[in-house]
Length: 135
Image 1 (tube, rainbow, N blue to C red):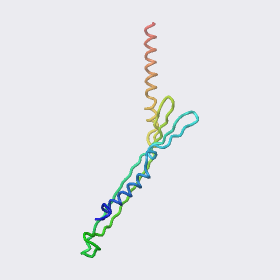
Image 2: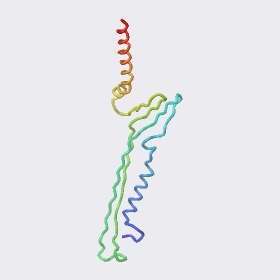
Image 3: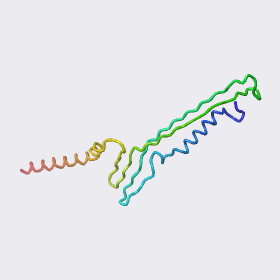
Image 4: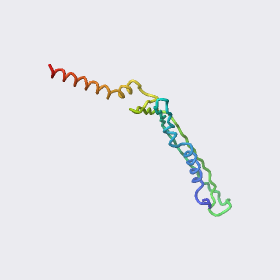
């Protein structure tokens, strides 16, 4: 054990985690908004994945070390980060839409306009009902 407070693997893990923390912040997932001339906000959205591994071992020295309880240590740590854009959040004064980078754009558009289509069908039915009542 290290007399300076803690096992050497703790230092490896702490260093790796601090590096990951510096690389990834909230602006990595939700990017900075861009405002267009007409007041629309475009906000990039990304998927962030990260992995971390650390390991090590202490080795017997058969009494050759410079003190009682001395065990040489060998270890390592590593981390990986993946950032993948998934879409853009489009914010207009009257609606909000998610425009995905990958996927079926036609199906998404149909889902977006479904409420408008249902409103028009409802108006047509109401108008037809009023015309039949007046006959």
